[in-house]
Image 1 (cartoon, rainbow, N blue to C red):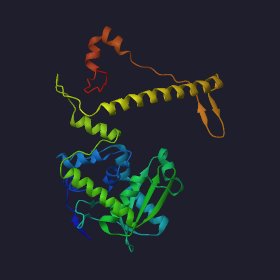
Image 2 (image 1 turned 45 degrees about the vertical axis):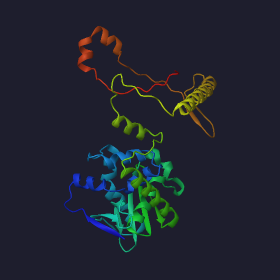
Image 3 (image 1 turned 120 degrees about the vertical axis):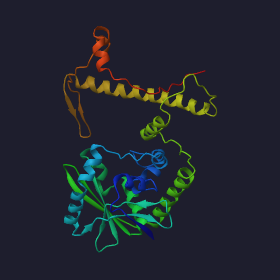
Length: 309
């Protein structure tokens, strides 16, 4: 069963603080390591810091603004009526699991998740597929609410509307709960950052935590010699593969000569003329330093380098 937390009268800051009190559906994929845009480390940062800044970008705005439209298209396609819920749900058995659902389906023990997707990501929805982090989001909602069915509907912008139906999967849900419990109790509660996973999201978190180095500070590097040796091997492999890639591209260019396009049954290659203009900042700095000072934008970052001792 679950606890219902009323959202009526709760402002944005209050809602964001509620989200910090547990793992939500949009966190589930990141906690499980399958969200290409987030990571367990990023979720840890969100749940353990005091900031309640709301994420805001064009993709998020489009998804929010089109939520009603997606729900309406779902009703048109299925005949099922849906309604908004003015509650956040918290699992009583697993209180670290919360759910802020898009819609509930009237007359069914079911919910609905509404998505918008770029046309560039249309292939991820082809042939009945669903992006994996969205699958886990839906099963997270089932785990919290106990509902046996969850629909997910998506508008592929400029292309199509599609929807899928997910049914209760005991094994999957049990595994999901175990992973979320391990993350919450082993990392969030204990304030122990989860290990990095190589994602850009982890880079961003590490940069935020350790943005500035203490000058002239140094520590003994312990336990990393084998990993750094492996890093050197990887860099050699990458260089070899990049060289092979360039060789293939050069062979195709020699075949194409001065043609702009080439195609086969499998591939379409373009080698087009591109004209661009860039500012010569070195010259501006030398000849018009006052302009460079007025319009120059300072940046601060830490450069990571590895050299043999």
